[in-house]
Image (cartoon, rainbow, N blue to C red):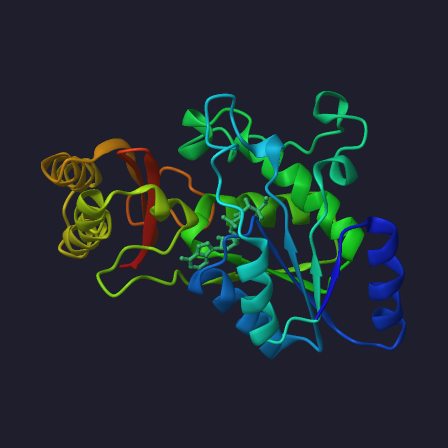
Length: 281
Ligand code: PAJ
């Protein structure tokens, strides 16, 4: 596996693959890779001749009081994991390479509406930062397809919308959430949990499962949301939101809507955990 840090080194490498007619899959990440990330790489491997992974802790998507400086950076271990999974190229640019004129004057990509609700409501500017960096990375790598985890369900939909609206010739593939054996969705931020908090963290997934069960039994949306909220509080989590939405676009479901997603975010110690569960009725 080759590691490149500069855009002008990356471009000719991927251009040669494209000239040779090789299909290129791309997995953007912020590193500190776990089995969730590596599952994206495995799926990429199965779908394309070439796999490019990026690692860039994107400052543009962190709020001023968020965990940018604490975010775990483990490039050496990540490198080994990616090599084992048969990655062709690791792109790990520095901040100056991505934002050479500085963040303040960086051209931005805004996906209105869907970016402003749920996680976007509590993390102002977050999805502008995500859409901007992913758009830039797409233009650098020019992949045929890119893979994103359903763990970050709203992010996946923001990227789908951006790609469609800007007519980017990239197929977006969503990959189901990889979980620990007790149900907790794998996340780089789980490392912020103390041992005691870690034992309570799976209540987030349990609350979503109970909510899904309630929906299948015909319970009202507000009732299901309220019960999940109470379950999180009972387990000592501080809920940010619990919301049942239409899976297609996160709109408020109209009566009779059949394909739903329950999304939740909750604080536990220093960590802000998110998870979601799709429900077909
Ligand atoms: P990061 O949190 O590193 O996640 C990179 C990719 O891995 C995302 O598509 C995310 O949804 C996926 N992922 C994370 N945990 C997962 C799990 N448990 N199961 C399946 N997939 C999982 O998301 C980002 O980085 C950034 O916002 C990024 C898209 C790279 C833009 O900076």
